[in-house]
Image (cartoon, rainbow, N blue to C red; front, side, top):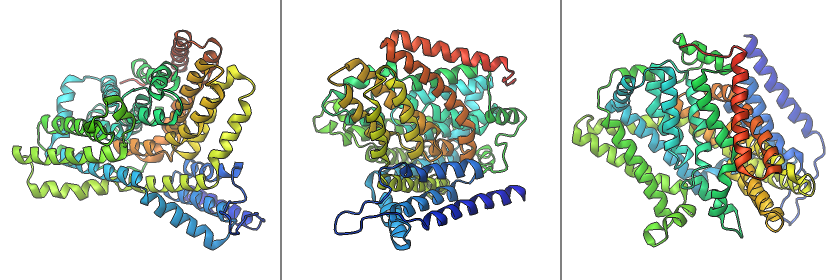
Length: 539
C-alpha cells in the first residue's frame, strides 16, 4: 500500500506541475506563418523525455510514465491550449509515427519474429536446442559466454539480434540459473555495440549516409578502433563473466537466480513460458534451420532494397539499403520456409502453425505498445527543436578545448540519445556538425570525434528506457522492462565512464594503438577493483 500511495503521489505531483506551468504565459506565434512553439530549441525541449524517464525509473511503470512525457510535450508545444495539445499528440504523434513506413516495417518485423519464436517453441526446436546446449555447456559462465558469442555473430541488425539471441539462448540460460535481467543485459550489450563496429550492418549503412561530402564507408572503417564504448562494453561483459563479477541491483537478481528465482520482482509476465517448453518435442534442426533461413533471407532482403540485384555492388547496396523493408521481406520468407519445413517434417499441423501467428503477435504487444509510445515521445521532442538546441551547444564548444572535444561530444551524444531514445537520430544531429568543424582542419580528430558521436549515441541508447533496442532486449529475454533498465544502468554507466577517460587520452595522442589498449587495461582494472569489494557470484 505504501508503494502504491507513493506512486499515486508522484503522478499527482507531476500533473500539478503541468497545471501550474499551464497558468504561465507561453508566447506562441499562430499567424499565417508556420507555427513555432515559444519554447522551441530551448532546454524545455528535453523536459518531456526527462520527465518520462524519471517517472519510469521511480514508479517502475513504463506505460503511464511515457504518456505523461508525451502529454507534457504536447502541452509545451501548444502553449498549454487544450485543442492543440491533443491534436498534436494524436495527429502529429501517435498517428504520425504509425503512418511512417519505416516504423510500420519494424512493427511487422516484430510480429513476424514473434510468430517465428512461437512456431519454434511449439515445434520443440527451442527445447531441443536447450537440451543439446546443456550437454555442451557445463556452467553458468559457459551459458553466458555462448550468449555473447551468438550476439557477436548476429551483427546484421540490432532488432534481429535482440529477438533471435533471446529466443535461442533463453532455455539455456534458464537451465543454468542466469537471471532474466542478466540475459537482457547480455542481449542488449551485444546488439547495438556489435552492429556499430560491424562494417556490414544496418547501422553502418545509417552512419555512412550521415557523412555528407566524404567517403562515408571509409570513415566508418577508420572510426572502428576509436569506438571505445562498443569495444569496452564487450570487454566488460566477457571480463565480468570470467571473473564472476556482478554489482548494483544486478547482483541481487543473480543471487536470487542461483537460488532458483529468475525474475526477483513480482512482475513476471512470461513466467509460464518455461512450462510450455517442457511439454514440447522436437530436434535441434527445428530451430537451427529457421534461424539460418531467417539470417540469409534478412541479408538478401536488405541487399534487395539496396539495389544489389539491379547491378549495385555489395557494399553500396548495404550502405543504401532500407533496413525496415529488408527485414520485413526477410522475416516473411523466413517464416514461410519455417512453416514448409514443419509441414515436411510433420512436427506441426498446418492449423497449429497458423495458430502460432496470433500467439506471436500477442507476445509482442508489450514491446509494440512501448515502441509506439517511445516513437510518439520522440515526435514531441523533435517538434520542440531538441536537435537544434543540442546542435547549438556542440557548435558553441567547438572553438575551444579541441583536444577534449571527443570526450565532450561523447557525453553530449550520451545525453541526447538517452533523452530521445534513438541512436540514429543522434548520429544525424552530431555527425554533420563534426564533419563541418574538422574536415578542413584536423581529419584525424574528425575521425575520433565521429567515433565519439557513434559511441555516445550507442551508450545513451543502451541506457535509455525509451530506446527501441532496450525495449526489444527486454522482449527477447522475456524480462520485465523496468527490471532490465534498472539493472543494466550501472553497467552501462561504468563502461561510459571508462570510455570518457579513454576519449580524453585519444584526443591528445590521436592514435588507437595507444588509446584503445589504455582503455582496455583501465576497464579490466575497474573490474578487478569491483571484485575486491566482494561483488562476486558463486555458482
